[in-house]
Length: 449
Image 1 (cartoon, one colour):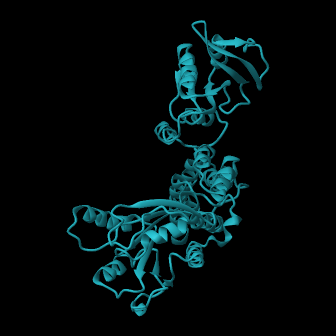
Image 2 (cartoon, rainbow, N blue to C red; image 1 turned 90 degrees about the vertical axis):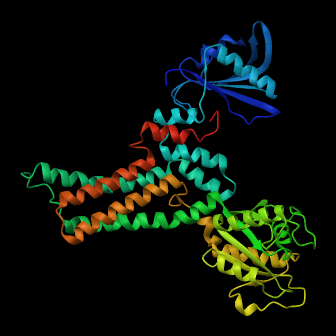
Image 3 (cartoon, rainbow, N blue to C red; image 1 turned 180 degrees about the horizontal axis):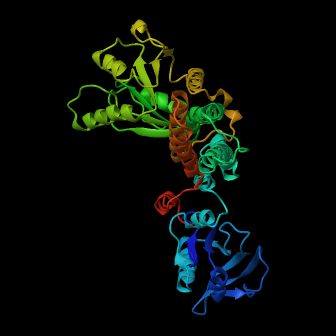
């Protein structure tokens, strides 16, 4: 952590501007070696300075250099950002000059990793950085922003404080029994505190399901026999001609994907090959991929043709999707009815070519996923899978502690479970983070962040 690292912080490709970022004790001096302009070692902090990057006496690029001195920087180290022209070659050349002058190529996420290790942010804020970059909707961006400003940390910290207060009092009772003035902790005095913490954890875990949907979207597969209108349905929802549509059965032979923002939740849509028995080798592969897509889907749109009677393939799909979140769609409502609707249960009769019908379908999905109150998002919506896993660990330990209270266990045994819950919550904010965990988490970040 004592060396100086460098990376390109902007996206690869051609653009107006690229940023080459450095952080570390020698960041300013490394850039100054190649900078023709003011002496960067003497300019005030948090200033932008015009000049040129020079290599072997030749001008590489005309640049603006931002000087940010520790500790008021992203990493709490000296940070320098070189704003150069956005061509791929010139940006790479500026990077090469910095490497030649003594910087080391940064690992993925190493800038944010240093911010965490140097105490500028906790682990929830570090993970929120990537959530912000990955945000696909206004709602997922809002969750990332709340975590980034420390709301999730404060929430978890309050829960930990309640448990730590119990742990401290129990240990004082055990280690110093002669202190008669100290409050004596009993099963009865622990019970309301543990119930309160359990209730708060329960609310967090319940909200985590919708939080993850907001963040990651709903993996949605459109399933049905050939020529029931699956591709038309995909095109209708996306409001574009994404999939090829013909009246020839088996037109779609592979999955076709699209994405739509549905009132703050993203549907990751997959149109699949029609499911039927076939001797066509290519179509058969498509059918197998369709069946596999059902297993991986969060939501199944099962499509039937209003103008055709139910077949064994239809019945197979009804059975195969009965335990999945699904919407049954009877398409081609404008054609003569031949389908027996009594065997389908709850369904939507519609035409994939009708805009109003598409809107009705979307409202049905919103209702399924309780999108109505999505604007009320606050810090209790935790969407990070690792953090949710730790919430479950803490809940299990609190349940064990309460079981000990109800069964009359001695308080020092109950304290073991309370301590485990406190530790699990600490893992969320990085209080007990191991080097291997830190390295694994930050390896998932993009280079230069």
